[in-house]
Length: 189
Image 1 (cartoon, rainbow, N blue to C red):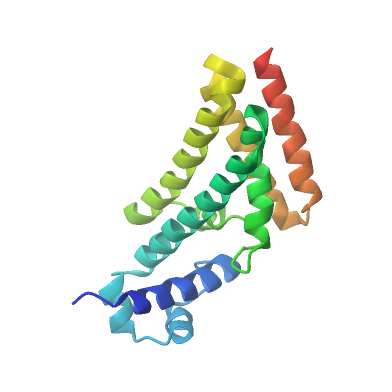
Image 2: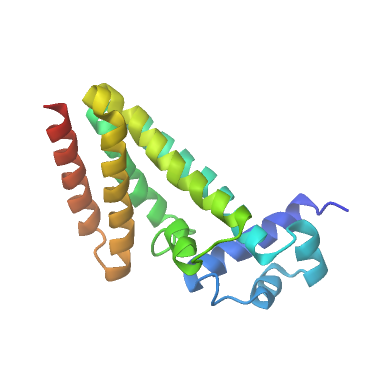
């Protein structure tokens, strides 16, 4: 029997709220069940395991993040600004009620030394999407160096997100943007 969409949404809402603020391993399934108001059978019928629920919450979060990033790119006036729009998007996404204190993907990756396949796939989807989008956006600015620049910018973005745990926000985003702009300038020469 397939779960109703509203039940799945309640589970995802509870998972997002608890896992990405308290931590995945620190949050027992019972807490998610209580917050969502569902039974264990409902959870396991809908997702099969805690890790599948985490992966589904990450996949939903990735979709939400990409929509915010798309809006920031669309608002950017030129090619260089479109690359740097990732930092505008980070600020907008973080300010949302569901914004976590840092990156849910980095948090989940840090908690699993050897993640189950379903979770590893969700984590890789985020990493690949970040690199691919940065490469595509950087292409008009740096040409054939776009893949290399995307790897460098991925590191800057990830570092910016990680520094939020140390209270570097909002200045951390400003610093990351300056570093990213310097990477672009050096690659464009």
